[in-house]
Length: 392
Image 1 (spheres, one colour):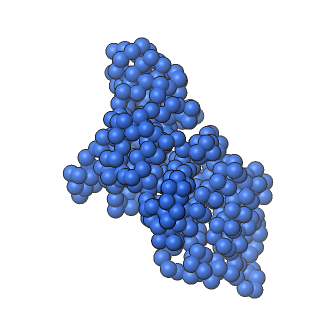
Image 2: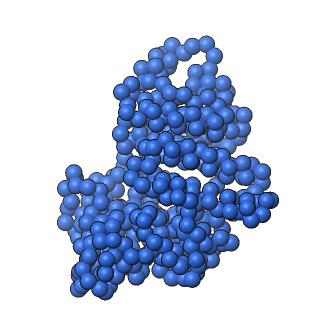
């Protein structure tokens, strides 16, 4: 019954985020950047003690191959990604329920620690592939300061978001990128205690990376007005990169600019950045606008909704949604993971049930729209389940 209360959130709607000005109440320590592995600076809060353990000579431990596959384009639309997520989360949740914290030492010693580390890296990379930045940072930091080699093995896939075929060296530093390589950075971690609906200023910097024969520095900034990537050529010959912008939940980009010239609205989300000796800093910036859609959220702790326990959950699709087979697989994984009935329903069925409910308890409906909005709903569903099964 305890697990069944997790998904009451899926019937409730979280308030849409509202941008705010940079919070003046943060302490100087919260603004201080933490140098990590000698090449990356991240905010001190909330995971500074974990990043402080990562030295420039830390030998990285590579994440599982199947976890890296979850970063590939389209991986969030593949049933095997969701099966991996479900099985991994079930193990992490079982350890949490037994009283072992995510960064604790399992009772079965080194073997258990190895499995735990692989699981945490896997959840971090699955979240990164779905652009769930806060979840990705949470799982990566759960390695704790005692496992810097696992942090080093996965860090560069979150920031600056290098391709999975990039060699990772000591300290987690990415090796040489191929010309034209894509950087897909996540938003830097938000300070502790700042709710998700607040967009707060934060930044991360990376130094001395190489693409082709060009050496460059970069910076990722998220602020109340938008998100930006800054790239500066430092030495070597000319080369090119492509870069995506970090995103925030509940927002999309109302306009994008490269070196302050507007990019057409129908242009690809990744901008090409040309690097050449003597160039000034290149800036790719996107303006945040509120996204008009609703997201699943979590219930109050300790609630035991009978409707969910007895009626289960219905993932509601339009009849012709090509995502049907995927969502059917997700429903099966959730049924096993949460111990409740999770099934598919069509939009018309849900509407008829609401108008004339049958005897007993009808399932709680979660509408999964077509297209990108549906992908975001499924990602939010993953966040809701993770947060409930393994509380933050």
